[in-house]
Image (tube, rainbow, N blue to C red; front, side):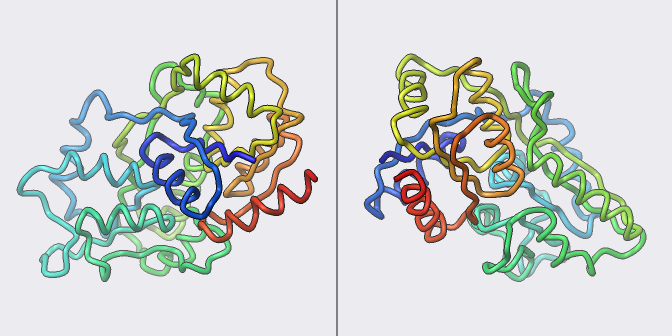
Length: 273
């Protein structure tokens, strides 16, 4: 039984190492290509006016990394002794880790608790909603679809979540603004990756999906392929629904933590036995 990790390249490699360390054979098959935006003017303006915001909400670890990559040398920062009191909001553990790597002080950071039922915009709002007062400005750092992406027909779980979050900010009397820090696209599957995907459609492999966009990109890369004999683990109900709609024969949901993913993978194995 092999695990197919579909996250973007860098994240996929980390998950492969973590799963392999637990004795689970895993291989990376990135189904989302991530890169910098073509025009960084909006990012530069966001940094210049960072102290106008009460908080910056990051939709993913990639949003964190690409936002901080664009940071000017003298820009305000999210550190404990800074006069700038802006907070950093993370949707889950991966985003939190990315913020800590960038030097964000833990006391400036808000995220769903580790025992939250889900790690998403809805769970984050339960934590930070009371902080938003009328007139407050909140910056939402997101990704965008590059040319060739399947995103127009496959709105991502992050996309719907960030829009919902912005709506909650507005309902609380605040003002939500967006800045695009990175671009997503459909990867070019080489011959080896394509052969791996075709084998994994029917050989008992378990696909790990953490984005509806990865599901859509897989369908775009292999149009007409049947997934009726394939198995998947999805880290959110919206992602599970996308996998089911794509035709995956067995789909299970799991929180995106290593112990729970492993337990879910074992359930998938039993259900297919």
